[in-house]
Image (tube, rainbow, N blue to C red; front, top):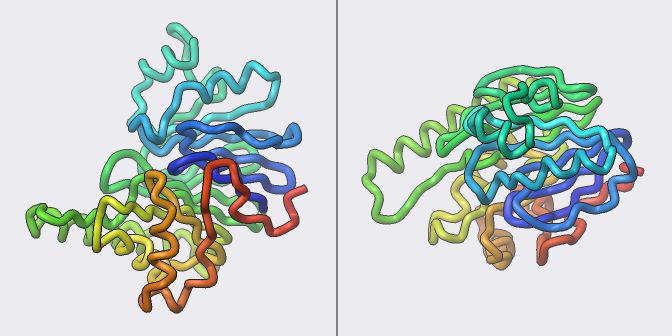
Length: 247
């Protein structure tokens, strides 16, 4: 698996026979070597959904799109240049929460975000990848206590569901929110995930150019059980994980 950080929550993942792109916002795609490409969009917020993804079909590459149904069908038809045509006819799928869908050689299972849209569990052969979208323990200073309590509860409920979907299997890679805007609570969701679910490789995202939050988390005692599993990200365009078996 070879993972290239594009920007914000956007990543390109190269497997031996597949290429995946999650939540493209901006940045340049790496050379994916003509592999089948599946593009995932967790929700309609502009920092997770850029209509430019539909231009990638013009290269002649085989592209399938898996979008949250929070991206309205009318907007998808417009952005993909389909007119009144059905998105499904153009290889564009819109999924709701808690669905299980076969997409080519991939198995795609979805969780419900406690912000908007979905999180994705993608299985390709023996490889399992999780992308959180905006599913996170969103604890904000100054917000009502009941709102923060709901965010924790709803987050943990979805993590429990994810654990059930995984069963005895372990995630190979998990893309997890690490948002500096949450101030002292910036690590809550990341830490809860690694303790409740876990992953061989934990890849931070949604950092708003504040990449130093990775070092902050690694320096905290709370991260000691999984510190070595946290990927380093310093700039857009860098390869942040390469297990050597993607090519």
